[in-house]
Length: 415
Image (cartoon, rainbow, N blue to C red; front, side):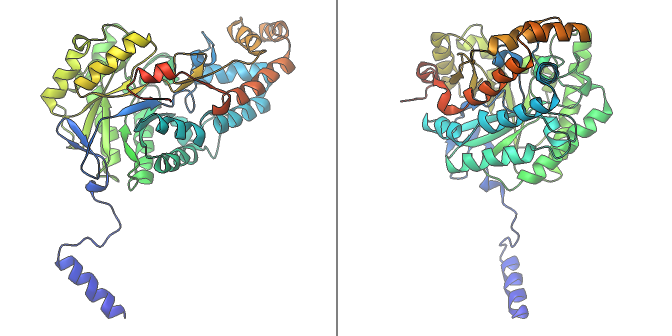
């Protein structure tokens, strides 16, 4: 029997038939000039949303203002209700904020893609969202991938918060400067995490691609901006090479500098055929004139250009911009899927006691005495914990309101 098996294997190899379980590029969404092609040979025009705030909390999506990044929010909650209650809140929040019901609803609109922002700490043993050791990054993303497989959606994995910070603002949960561009230790960790993610998903066709860094290099750093921009291509190369060590097939997505708007630092990029680009745009002119630089770069490179983030505007503006992107072959994922109030696909209503937590968050907590005073002024830890527990329930899909008109502006339907 062994001789027969070996003989069959040799015959298959001689005929050019692959005998490994590794999938070929034709099993994945792939780049073909300025288009994306599915495994069935169809052109894919990305339409979908971002699961922002779930694995990368942002203050404004809770109604906070100055407490606007993950570590600011976490510190404030620990001051309000203590460490154990904060850890439990984060677990409940992660369990409830995105469930299969959310994924099924997104699919029901006619969307085909979800962009999934994540924090790098989900793949380390650092303190993050209630865990230290045994972080649950793969567990959470694996579950979304399985739901998306069931409901026929693609997933883009977006490193929204990178080691050291790639942006230097609240959106990357950094310390006010894009240290990743200068710190070799952070760069090594960034590469290691992408290598591990690529190894984990290398045979997963539901994953459309890897978005290496969200909105690198904010425009706030004066003369440093030009220097930082000059380092961006090399930083992308570090992440790209780490991925290609283990995954030759998945698309790698590169965003421009300054809110994914400036592609000059990526001129003459030399990576491989399975690379595409991601632009972002909020506000401004909704006509093609607003994205001429994106179109020009797309045409020059002959690679797909995709609008990874757009939104937070009037229905009329979003209708026009969706039309502009469709007519110019730029797929899009609107930001965000869910947040407090409105200006999203679905919104959750703050519980009655939530304003007390907002008041505590925005109060002066610069000393221990002031923390105690602010907590008492907000009604005490018991009232603040009540608000947190209520929010954990409010964010469930069945407790949210759907903005059908918002979704309609994207060329989708929530009927």
